[in-house]
Amino acid sequence: MNKIFNRRYLFLGFLVGIIGVMTWLFSGPAPSQANLALAEFQVQQLTCGSCVSKIENALHDLDGVNSVDVNITRNLSKVAYDPSKTNSQAIARAITTAGYPAFVLTELSAEEYASVRTQESQLGDKYVARIGERLISRANFEQRVNQYPASDSSNPGRANQLWQKAWQDLLQRELLLTAAENNNVVVQAGEVELRLNGLRQRHSGFEALIKQRYGSMDAFSEQLREDMVISRNLEEHVFQGAEKPGLRKLQFQNWYAGLLKQADVVIFEPRLKEPAQSSGGCACCS
Image (cartoon, rainbow, N blue to C red):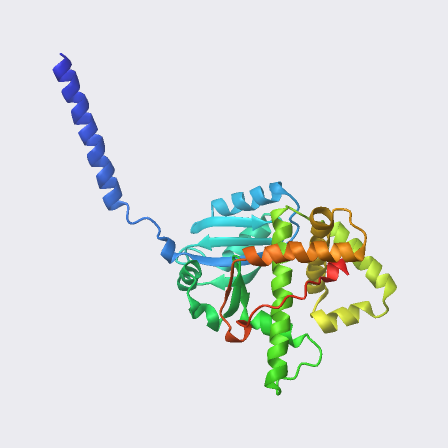
């Protein structure tokens, strides 16, 4: 009796194994990480973990989405997806429909995304550097350089100086924002609007000035929000109640030096590969 019982279970186990193998053979290959593209989105109205869950749920049922990363400190979302099944615009619409207006900031093809993961330098055609996981596009960086006063592209020495200054400012800003992100620092939309109203009251022609320098009020509002996030993080986690300017500056220099040592930075642009020279200053602590 026991022999018959054991034979039956051996046969059932064998049958289950065969079914599993056949299912694997005929179900087609599993999605390859090498075939995934990546898109980064600016997302509005993010306030808490519930927003993250809603966006993740909204994208869960969208065919082709592989992974979703939502950052409420930076108002950003990164989505890895199969470009043969969906695209960045469809993903942006899904996020927007969930109640969080989104637009595409950066797109990486499957080949480019694979290059990011292996840190290959061919990204230099489109990007000047990578700071952590964030790619700095060449177009956006050059626009940033052009915002500096006395930009003289006909003077190679002066142009290189401006590139270096823009890079150091951008590097510092990205590292400060990442530090705030790690501390889960968040600034609400109402706080930004309150600050904007104060600026409007103190400066005549405010709207025209902002449009001339930043292109739009939305662009300025986003930069202002980031400034407020950085300031809040410094006050709560770096200065820790210190009031004397000299002490605050010293605390910032020591802390920021640690950030630079730990920073994961890959530079693609040759003009930015000179040794970093940090001034140790920050607009938030002056």
